[in-house]
Image 1 (cartoon, one colour):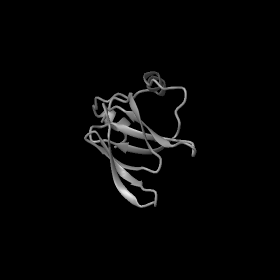
Image 2 (image 1 turned 120 degrees about the vertical axis):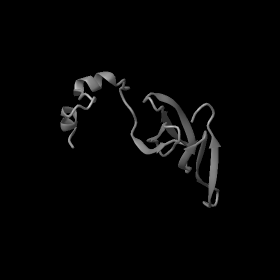
Image 3 (image 1 turned 60 degrees about the vertical axis):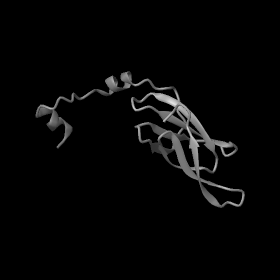
Image 4 (image 1 turned 90 degrees about the vertical axis):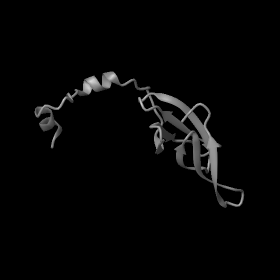
Length: 111
């Protein structure tokens, strides 16, 4: 059922104009591109932002469930994030011989 038909049938959802939506969003002038996304068990969204190949860590920007930026986290380059649960980041890293192993990091003050 199209949204307009649902609205006509008495739905309490009101259609918003593009101008209203843009006015309600507080956007920074520029965001780097996201290269990966994870959603935590408590509703936070982790966005891996683009990085330069010479960087020694990967930056994740964490968005709170209400849509506001909460904090950022730097993880080692080469670490592959699989999940964030109970204040812990779980993923796979590699040792000096490129052998993969499970890693866990705690997140202080975050999800």
